[in-house]
Image (cartoon, rainbow, N blue to C red; front, side, top):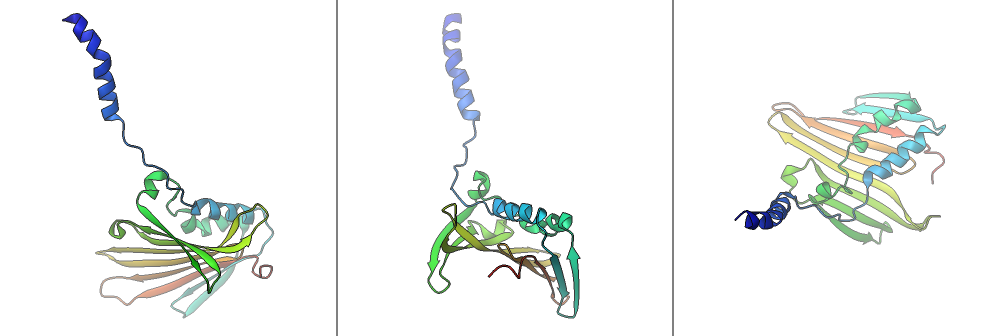
Length: 196
């Protein structure tokens, strides 16, 4: 009996180990939006660009100021906190769609959530030029993000646009129950005059 138990012990251990092992999510090969933004931020951190921020609230009040390079990362934080689509667990929650827009002469890659009710990010779009860069890749010219958060305390919507090597814009719309909608824009520019 003891020999039978010892002979079956390795099989039992293998069975238990295989049951406990979680199924790993497979990589979908999505583009890393985070690393695209991170490269831009790293470039700006070492540049001599004048970084200008214009904040407008409901088109009634506008503030314009210069941002020191050291503060740019904090200003761009909302883009840096987007979900990392190269993470297989995150990618499993999104679909990818590719198309070519003949009017804009751009490839558009869209990432949308499989279950939109569970995700704040409703869409991430990458606009890619057909021009080939020195390294053989194509340049992402724009990153467009739609984020919506609804709960019993109100509604928050952010439309975010990153223009590679130029600027970013965040338009925020909020509405509290029984209150009018409030819209504010945050536009940050750098290198605008040197980019075609």
